[in-house]
Image (tube, rainbow, N blue to C red; front, side, top):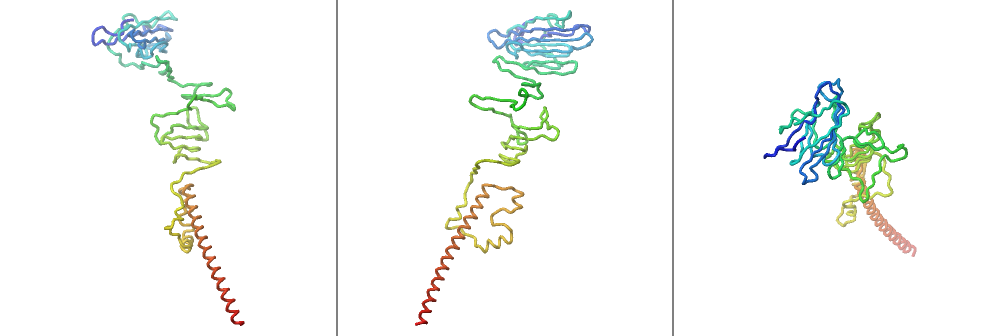
Length: 357
């Protein structure tokens, strides 16, 4: 077809019109193999493409379909410019040549004639362009689909939906065979598990979510979607809720064999010598006025704010320790009263004996 670029500085790239409609009366069923040979000193400057062009003779002014796929080498070796009635190509690599061969399944061919309208001016007004992924063009319905590709290092990029065991309804769709009593997907890590990453999910968006009763596009099905597990961008995790307002929010019961709550500070200050134990008279007055113990949240406060388990245990222990001090004081008073009573009894017996004598 020609050189990739001019031989005079600044060595501008050439643009070639590979194919066009040569007549509205033509029918095309043509495969073109296009080979980009860049500088042979570098293995990754080469790429081979297969182009398929279809047109029915009744169609006027445009093709019906066009497909471009990289079949070997570097999919970024060339840039294609797609019009509904023509295809242009430019090498992305200097100091090489562009080659082609055609397979015409019908008597007519859309291949252009040499010098392929060679120019150093980029085409304008194209409908689609690609320099990496493959491209499938449906001109009948004005649709353009990106196709998967493999780079020179063997990395595969899938540009559409991927289904495993099913026709995909979304980007990744897996279904176990029979889908009865079987996991739809099983991922095995040799040393690490599965990592899910998002670019910059906010608190309003989720980084990871598991839903039930959902449509294939992720929207809620009839009756409403059911959030099972929801991890927001701010790190809040919801189980049974998609609006967690804490690092872990559970809508429902929690059953555990053991729960450990780390707590800053504890109620042992009650036993310090400088702690002022409230009098029982003050406690009685507070209870009559407020209908709950001092420093313990009221029923309305619990209904509104919820219950802090760690803080509540601390407060309850404080009350237990205060009760313990009250009991100790009462015990001391009881012992003192018993001692005084015994002394009074002893004095009474002494006085009685004196009276008898």
